[in-house]
Image (cartoon, rainbow, N blue to C red; front, side, top):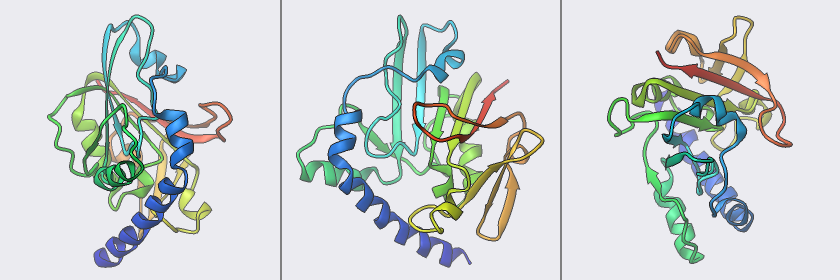
Length: 217
């Protein structure tokens, strides 16, 4: 089973790289510049004057932003396909304003309690073992910090389990959310208790997404 999962992931990787190459010009124009963080960061920033953010599974560019009024924002972006993205950017002579660091979200190399906010959008459903990635995000989040997860509703089913979309994520009645895939089902709050999950429209014209937030105590 593990070999089959890895084989599907490798096949999905090339589909993802094709997508990024096809959307490269649009993504560069939209994201390869400095722009403000979305308003959903406001309660996570609070009254801090210095905030460190880790964006896990960031993709080719920093899509989070880096500006907030009177606050020094330090954004670290990482993705397991960072080397492949860099080859595409080099090919088109594009210089990203934020370096995307190569990291496996299931085995991050950052030290414990390194970041005020750990942010992950549309990436956990790409993992072979998302439960490991969730534990890693918790590990690198500081006490009093935040973990913010936002994912499409049941994207595995929506995309017919093609590309890197191997898991379905959906909210459940107790305020948690359920991960379904690879003959495995687990609840987010069974991995790390305390997440609050809801289906909500968080950004612009984006459809309602599964949003899970944890304030680490």
